[in-house]
Length: 315
Ligand code: TUI
Image (cartoon, rainbow, N blue to C red; front, side, top):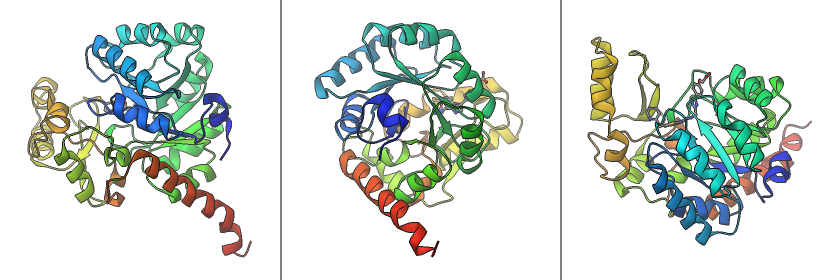
């Protein structure tokens, strides 16, 4: 499958791995890149020097292009923005904000910059700022989300910009990839399905929760108190946060509950108090596979669908 994304990034498959904070480290990123996609190391809110070490580890594990995701709400974003230049990282994706202030230095360093956007307005701004492509991420996704679904967001972003668009949110098999292509995307980003990969280093309880989730098992916190909306698997933690939000808790009171919640999920596997970020598509993820198998399964299925669909509809 050749698109402007495979050409831009020099990869076999137009697929990026989501930049999942506390989840996406060098082992996972290198596995996705070695499989022909683009793996990402997530900056999250980790100390920037820890991420530098992860970048160096990934360089030892793969000679293919990989990237770093910079979460712009993190206090370390500025430091990390310099480190990706110093380390000669091939691709940068960003989330949870507008990376405009860093764009010039990244472009000057030859980095391919692909911001994640949740709205047409930000997609347009990113194109004007010099982004190489954008990832249009629908609210089916896990983690911090906007308000528009993938089905509605992707074609509107495709119509609004002329740089290539990747679709994200709710994609975990060939049907999702084929649908994204029909919406005008030239690539995809997947996160949730890579949580259930052999190479993903999260606590086994996290993987178990993803495998066991059904379609309605995620909840969105942060919608009432003015913080960031975050989708994760329903548990005691989401119930408590949503209850407090409904009871009129302040931003600070909610923050007290949310601080450390991702670590409790990814590292400790604390089923009750962790924030197990995952997308709605977790309901369709039932097995642990190597990243290479996940990617070839998705692309083989999509290619067959795209080749045969017209005939099966008697078109
Ligand atoms: O960023 C993500 N997903 C994330 S970040 C994250 S870590 C975190 N944890 C707790 C609270 C907040 C973050 C976990 N998952 N996806 C990309 C994304 N970007 N989704 C939504 C946005 C977004 C939202 C508003 C981007 C820009 C924006 O406004 C910026 C502007 O200036 O218009």
